[in-house]
Image (cartoon, rainbow, N blue to C red; front, side, top):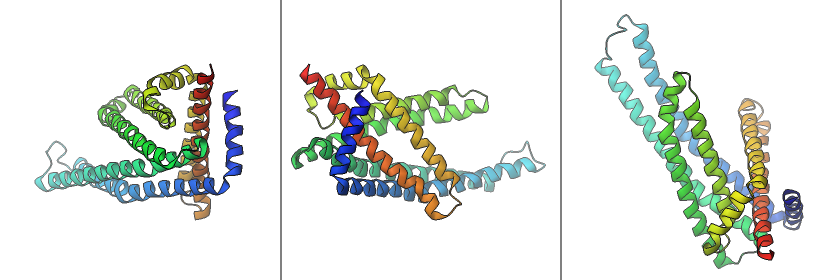
Length: 268
């Protein structure tokens, strides 16, 4: 089975390159930490601004003037809160995108060098390819969120979760195709369409279960982080350490699986 063979080869590679793999895990932790810091300084203030606006509406509802429009003072508070929250969210999007482009790209370059033994100049070419794929993927994810989030929230209030489900499925599909594209990036550009068809589609029955399992474990780890946020700091950090090692391992396994699919195709 392709997955078992790839896992065995990856484990063997990790044993031979322990120092490099530990470096990858440390870099992955830095990536997580950077995202966490960005969210702390943007998402939390944006949430507070949202609460201010909701507080104004709640106060109006609780007053006798239920049918009256907002006063100028209240309308100004709501407008300013919306403006500040939008600014925080835009800053979060830009910060996360920049961090993803740089640190995620570096992680894939180092991982590809471990699996394929790339030379330095090919590593630079790979970084450019990864940057292009990342920009396209982030653009698609942004459009999926921006295009569906508002309508999804409105329809959820009406009891329909279909648009939200469609948005989640679309983002999941983009994530799957992005990971396959990252794994194919080390290979010649002229062969990308053919190799993409062979891996992402023809071998989907072997790659999608790996992707879904990784997504499930990732979501479970994030849930553990939320559950342990009030616990001892060391206990709270354990899911992060596990997730960092898990991401490094999955990235190496995916590169190994795609490499095996491509080399098998060449032999055939």
